[in-house]
Length: 359
Image (tube, rainbow, N blue to C red):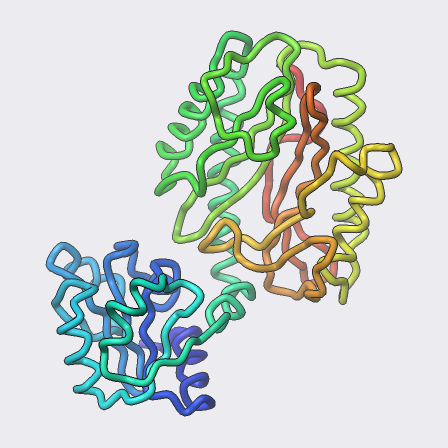
């Protein structure tokens, strides 16, 4: 079986640093390295020549099927005795660990007791994960397609008298019945004045005539997340809310059309931010224009005012300008993009229309 790209990256890292092995403990990176989906119930030990997956009897068959190129160690994942034995067996003297994902109590009660000299690996995995393979991009695209279709089927339920949480449940039902493993995150539905809260998770508020309804959601499918936002209206919006919608739409399109190779995150952010500020709403756009998406719904690639990161081919990131006016409401439009072969941004989200929708 061909070695996974990330395992080759890990072994190159071990060689360069002079380490003997690395324990992978976060579910995201266990999955990334091994394809194991028993999230949170396995650890990996990768050395320069071997690789082990440690998990218990609930997952033996699953681990052999998903991670057959790893040697299966039959034990509770966090068994200190078993991992200590394995570290000693493989003569691991210098051991890397995920210092960005390990709690202090885990470090003191587990890692420090393994009998090896410990070294944090920092952003090793994140730097690898932000550059997607074509297959990984295709899986994010599939998650986007699934979520977009679910939203289309949910449109008929958007009406006055429905609660935000009821609408969220319907949308999540549509995603699950279409094949999603779960939502990427807690679905955000914020209607009326609640729309001024960018992350207003669905509440028991009843949607009323004239409300704007911001819907921010995603599907976790094939080990990858999608993330998109649409703001729609139940009944005729006020003149100001209609204007805000058109400003946000223009800001997003300006950023997408204005991307040029070599741009940093802050450059792309500025394209959208300048449009919003030009209409007098600058103070009401408080968050970054975007973020990376992959195994996690927020995965590196800051597209923010201070980001010096150069946007590269293989990255997937959101473009999501918004305007949020306390006491009035808010609008956000969000899609995922990547950098195409022609050097321009290519839409990963193939979504329902972004023209102003009134139900």
